[in-house]
Structure formats: C-alpha cells, structure tokens
Amino acid sequence: MRVISYGKVEAKEVEGSSKLRLRWLNTDGSRNFAVRHIEIEPDGYSPYHRHSWEHEIFVLEGNGVAVGAKKEASISVGDLVSISANEVHQIKNNGEKTLKLLCMIPK
Amino acid sequence: MRVISYGKVEAKEVEGSSKLRLRWLNTDGSRNFAVRHIEIEPDGYSPYHRHSWEHEIFVLEGNGVAVGAKKEASISVGDLVSISANEVHQIKNNGEKTLKLLCMIPK
Image (cartoon, rainbow over all chains, first blue to last red; front, side, top):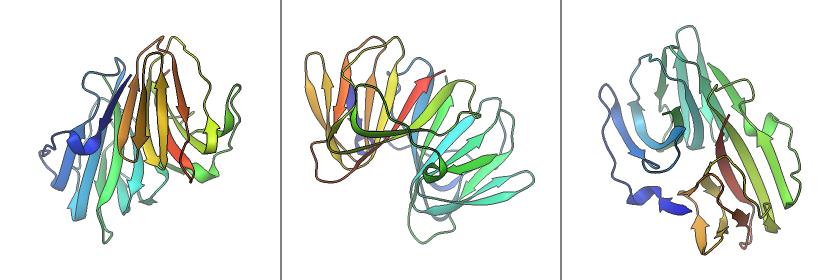
C-alpha cells in the first residue's frame, strides 16, 4: 500500500495546452492504468486532439466545458467525462477558479 | 463523449462494509477499467479483504485511514492510495464528515 499526496508530485506542462499542470500520480502503481491529476487555470485549456487511448475524467473542483467533435457539455464537481478511443476532445476552464480533474488512461 | 454526474447513478451497498455507498460511474465507458464513487459516513468502513485486482483510490473529500496488513496511513483530500493485487486493505472514516473516494479497478 502506498499513499501519495498530489501536491508532492512534480507538475509538468503539456504541449498544446494553456495554463495547465499535469501530475502523474501512480507511475509505480497500477499495472493497468495511469492516474493523472490536472489543474487548469481560468481561461486555460487542454489540447484539442484525439488519440488511440480512452480517457475517464472526473471533476474534482471548479467548472468547465468538455468539447467534442459535435457537441460541448458543461462540467462541474462530481461529473465523470468518458471519452472513447480516437474521439476528439478538449477541456476548457470557463469558470473563475482553478479546474481540478482526475484523468485516468490505460497503460 | 458522455458526461454523467455521480449523483444520478444508483448507489449500492457492499457486503462486509458499514455506512458505505458505492456507485459504478462508467459501466458503459472504459474498456480497461471501472471508476467507482464511494461515500463512507463517519465511523463507517469498507470490507477488510483482499482480491486479485488492484485498486487506485483518490480521496475527494474528508479524512480517513487506509489499513493494510502491516500498517495504517492517514488519508485526506488529494491523496492517492495504491493497493496492489492480493494486498489486504480497508478504508475507514475516522473523521467527522462524509469521506468521498474515487476508486478505480481494472476490468
């Protein structure tokens, strides 16, 4: 059993994003999936992109918008956003405080 | 892209637990792992058990204790608890408000 606080993990920037910090929480943990902590400041955003792996994104704090190819959806605390493999997606912070997310991807 | 609020998912009880509600958030989502939302009321606990699948547990709200075979660790908001396959574990709420967790397991 290992316990790690997200604040103790080094934050990294992500290409194509703005005002976003990403932390890989369990690099030595799960064999099956990675858990990443993401903070997006107001007016910031994740890359608008697609890739071969799926996402599951849970909103921890704040408000934002999940952008897909055909629709947008408002997201707030307690929402899970499921993004399938190869689906275009982007998360924007249109709120007034930091948007905090937990983002899981398969390894 | 699908967005689902945890409050709209039916809560279920878990055998061997006390004062615990569990919601499966992405039953039709990820092919690789399940995301479950768990609430444990003060003095409640998850089963003390082991199983063949790993856990990654992120603390959303509240305080508690993660119990392993050889040690206990205090946990609070922003902590990730990584539990390996076949490792004995239990989560207890020793705080004064609801302990909210996000628990990921492989499918």
